[in-house]
Image (cartoon, rainbow over all chains, first blue to last red):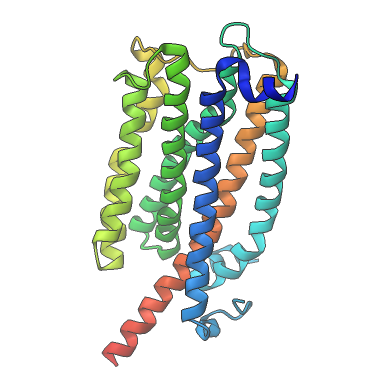
Length: 58
Length: 241
């Protein structure tokens, strides 16, 4: 299979790559938002670890 | 080892942190392997051409959307019945990932429907009940965020989640109960699969990847929820002191 055939996907390129693009954005977005949420928490609560003995959130 | 110990959010927090890489790393590997087999090993379908390759994300997303909803309802029910805070937090954490996968199943389904059925959307039983599942997730999330008192929010969410569980078997059996445009189940437990082995392998590997991803992200989110809620409790204690 050539590169252009791969992109073309037998005339279904828009639908196939569209599906995977949306999936990539959705999953990547979920990870990014959670990462930001964690960062925000860490900035606001540096002294939270009082309640957790086994691990200091870093 | 006392397992009940981990029912306390503060004890579960470090355990969840240790578990995350054991799910996240295999998930990343399986996503790559599954997509490789799906695009480079699996042959072009005789009937649908290459459009069928949407199945590798569509079916796992749809399965996870349903499975995570049942799990959410079980956790919400445990949280309600036994006043278990961690179980309610797990339900909240599951709702975002479940909604995300249900959304993906609807969007990839529309992108698959257009070239094969000639339409983005039809009000058929499978599609409609899947849309209802998405609304149930959205309802759960907005109900929880609308109620200030955390325990009341958990209970209200639990009620919605438990009532909504009836929708999951409706989605699953819709293709058998009604005459739908949507095709029947691809894999049945009792029948031999009708797909070519590499197609089936790619789909199952992608399913495993999505499942492992869900575990990792739900654990990571529940850690944030634990911290946020403990923070609120601490703030309340300060105000009332």
